[in-house]
Length: 325
Ligand code: PEP
Ligand code: MG
Image (cartoon, rainbow, N blue to C red):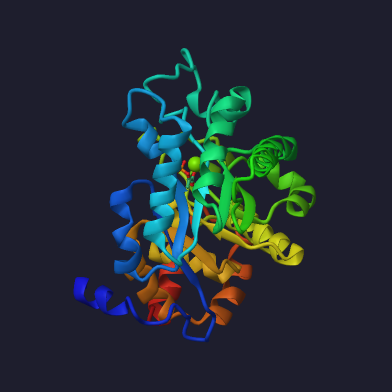
């Protein structure tokens, strides 16, 4: 199978009925970057900036961060990189920032909440990203945004940094695209306002599952209790992809489900055209999608999501087998 997957590297990422699918990588360390060429992925759809912070004992300054992000962009070359700002807290605390004792860390002080409460942290990171991307395109997204006002506040900090850079005569990025992760369900009820503001959306299905089902992703008793391939989650995802398409804003999925072939198949059937995954998932997902007839699956999914099943996985697996996927 390894050889079979290696052989898919240079094959087009297009379904059997001709729908192009963008396959991107999830990365967080410089050592992940060689996978970009090796896997044939189109770009980095999620660069988790917290990973290098987690292994340090002191906070990297703007200069150190700038060098790091510039290296990521250098190594990615012509391929786009989507940086996510610091997503710490919950299960990913830094040794030098204390959140204090939190009874519900996943619902606690984490991600953009820390960034907005300590704007200097976010400002420094955004300044470093803007500097690193001088003269080239920059894409940034924020984690755990729960309401449009939080997106506006984070974006205002980015704009402030951009103006500061320009006042100092530094070269800005050639283009700045700003988006948000969809991880907190409250955002789903503000989609029209959100879609007016963002350049793109990215679904963090790991956290979205956790919050939609009120089911801790880190607890073995609850982590796999509910299935993303279930009527509630698929109905929600379909609504998201349709609203984004109507607004003309790109949307992708960067949670783990995008890297599991059956789940990825389902996401494509719902209308997603951009999936970001761990490097080892690229081969299996590409092999799956090259044998997929999207039109047939789309029709089947409409019927499936109206039922009361706990999980649609058995039926979707049967569909895949029946269709030679
Ligand atoms: C997610 O929540 O799906 C996601 C991609 O972010 P992380 O796994 O880093 O929380
Ligand atoms: Mg997340």
